[in-house]
Image 1 (cartoon, rainbow, N blue to C red):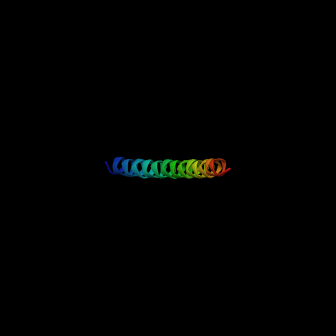
Image 2 (image 1 turned 60 degrees about the horizontal axis):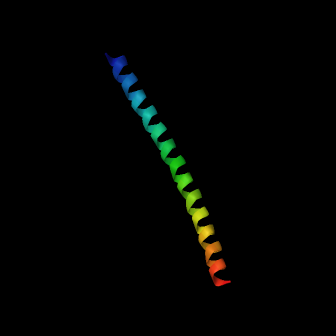
Image 3 (image 1 turned 90 degrees about the horizontal axis):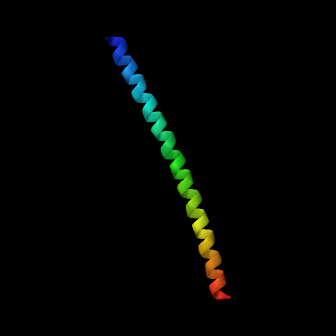
Length: 50
C-alpha cells in the first residue's frame, strides 16, 4: 500500500512539473505575440504620420 502512495505522489509531482512547463511556454508565446503587436502598431503609426 505504501508503494501506491509513493507512486501517486510521484505522478502528481510529475504532472505539476509538466503544467509549469506548459505555462512557461504559453507565457513566452504571449510575450512574442505582444512584441509583434507593438511593432505593427508602431509601423501603423508611422504610416499614419506620413
